[in-house]
Amino acid sequence: MNDQPSKRQLLRNAGYRYNFDRMIYMNRHVKKIFSFEAVDDNSVEWLSDRIAEPNPGSEWVLYFNGPLSESVRRQLLQELQ
Amino acid sequence: MSEQRSVADKLRAEYFDLLPEMRRVAEQLETLVRHHLLVVTLKLSTYEFVDVANRLKACDSAVDSLRRRQQAGFFDEAKFETYSLLSLKDLVGIKVMAFPPRRVEDVESAILPNFLGWTLDPIPPAGSGEPNLGTKLYGYCTASQRVRAEIQIVSMLAGQFLNVEHAAIYKPAPNLRGAVKTPELMEKRRQVFAALREFEEAFEQVIRESIEN
Image 1 (cartoon, chains in turn orange, blue):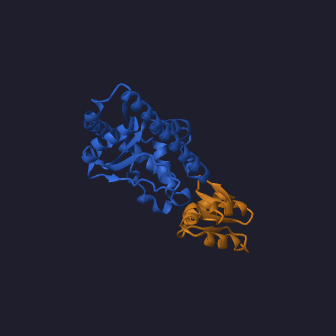
Image 2 (cartoon, each protein chain N blue to C red):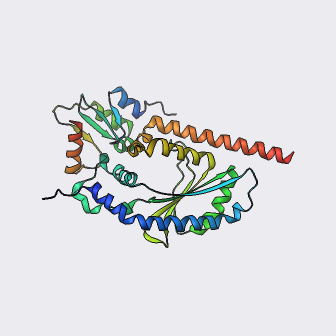
Image 3 (cartoon, each protein chain N blue to C red):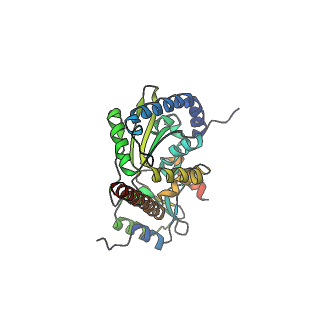
C-alpha cells in the first residue's frame, strides 16, 4: 500500500493551487509552476525535491516535460502578471 | 494594414469549411449504425431501449479541445500552419445508449465487427481514476477521408449523465472541460459512473428475476 503523501497533497501543502484552464499547479509566492503532465510523469521524490528547490530570482521557474516555446512561455507569463 | 490572424481565427475558418463534410459524415455514420443495430433493436422487449444520436462538435468546443492539448493550453503562434481541427478524432460523434446493460453487449457485438478498420480506445485501467465511459472507436467513413468520427457505445444512464453534464456545464463554458481533470472531480466522476452502473445492473437483476418467476 502506498503510504507516501500524494503528489497532490504535497503541492497543496506547499501552497500550490491547480489552474485547470492551463493544467498547471502554481504558487505565486515562490513563483514556481508545475505542469499537470510533469507532476503525473515524475516520482513523488522528484516532485518533493523540485518543490524544495529555492527560487533565488524574481523570474518564474517552470517545470514542464519539454521546453516551452518562446511564444507559449510569453503568453503564460503575460497571463500570470 | 490588417492584423495577422490568430491560430484560433484560422481554426474557426477551417471549422466552417469542414462543416458540410461533417454533416455528411454524421448522416452516413448514423444511418450505418442504425442499419447494423437492426438485429438488436427489432428484438427489444418493452422495457429495453437502444438510442442512437449524432452530434457535431461545436466550433468553440473544437477549437478549445485542440487548445487544451497544447502546452499550458496555449497555441504556439510560431507553429500557426501546423494546427488543424482534422487532428481531432471526434469532430463527429455517434452515441449509442442501451438499457439494460446486457443490451450494451449486444450493441457492441452488432457494431464492432462492421468497423474493423477503426481504432478502439483502450478502456482505462482499474485504479487509474478515469471512469469507464464504455466502448469508443474512431475512424473514417466513405463520406469523408478527412473528418474523423467517433462511435461511443455506453449504458443508458451513463450516456444520459454525459448528456446532462455536457448541456449543463461544458456547452455554456467549453473551457470548464479542463476542470474535470482535477483529481477531486475525477474521483467524484468515477464514483458517479460506478454508482450508475451498479444501479443498472441491480435493475436488470430485478427484471430478470421477475420474468423468471
